[in-house]
Length: 637
Image (cartoon, rainbow, N blue to C red):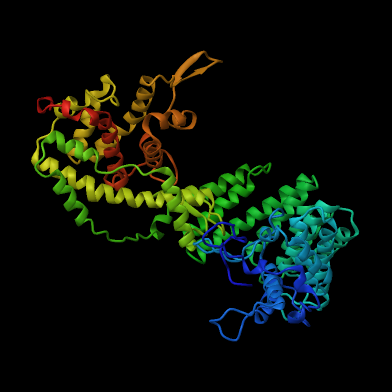
């Protein structure tokens, strides 16, 4: 594979600086004249395009690593071939089966098919027609057809080529990378056949080349079943079902036969996946009785894994995971209610042991510098000035910046979010799951999880470095009372007139350090104030039930689901997003739900999230007053 360069292939006339042409685009049809472009791979038995890419590289490199290779026809063609064969093969993506093998943060990357769209399709076609190595010919033909769907003959050439590669690998004439004995019961063969069947769907399911590929899939699936090769059976049975190559019931019967005579040392994970695949096969065959039987068998294997985790590995967390999966597997199966109930009872018993396995990990943060700046800002100001300074200690981040930062963090540290995450409460129950980022573009769930982690750190710094420092400083210098807050809050457009005293009591408790009273008083008031401000802005915040002809106010969840645009217009997106992250969404503190349903434990109100939440509500109360700060005299409070 040639060295990555910026994603630019042409120079623009009139520009002061010419845009460099990608090395793999310098070759022309004229370079093919009297050229044996396959000399570098002559005699290669590799069934892997990436290995061919490596074989083309020595003919590109010069003797001196610090000098550019000679600009000859042979070198230009070798760079092109190395780039095309070095592209990342993605058979699961039928519309984009090839991608860049390397992408750098600065935008540089290796070749992708669209690089060759302008002016190079004819060159690829000529190379494909002349290529003798089946792997090279197939890759060139597939890319050529991908770029120009009118060249159906190259799509057919690629379809036939994938079948030829697998057949030759099965005979030992070609070898997949890292394989010495040969054979086609390999995941690489599965990938080639998946791409072949994709092409068959698009070019003609009854084409002879497609019929050949389908026959190979059936043959390999049956061979895997006969030899009781569990993992290859998973590969090729799933492929068979994905494209409905064989009768689905036949696939299910093959799986049944293998699982009934499991080889020694069969891994339970593979057995579970086989039962699930069998259930899928019988579902396609409309054989519900067999489908439910396979689902139940998978559930019982999961339950057995839970027992093993609890007894042999002494891991309540793992046991709870497998039991949860077993209960989910039994969902929808008639006659399993009692078994599901039994498993749920076992799950509750095991979850009670999870807190014993949980460990606390801490990282010390030196907040002295932040605290010193806050104390200096508070200084000798008047009480009213201190309260306004207190309300402006922190700000809500821009939602777009949160997403950008999360995506950048995932790209820089991919292993930290590669796998999915289970979020547990203090009793060990899984209350939320987020998906892993995978490879490439991170999943939205992984981004949300990363944002939650970043925001948790920000709230920690704000709560203990700024808010607590300022709160204590104010309390040390001033005697606060309900009257002080009532005098201030009566002017706030965020506080309804009939709740001024309740808000005042909540904030007094907050400043006094009684965070338990503060969080339980202020959190329910937030919902009412959001409705109040929206009504004052001309929005209808009620719901009318046509059936009962009754009218009710929207809950805070309904406001964010149905009136998010109105909330953004009134409060701005940073504030509404911050509210959502603190009070409503998982992963996150989920404070509104936790307070409403009594899910907080005794220490929760003294944590960073609760302190920040109380301060945030205070900030919302004072925000409408900032433009009128000079009009508020000391006599008011």
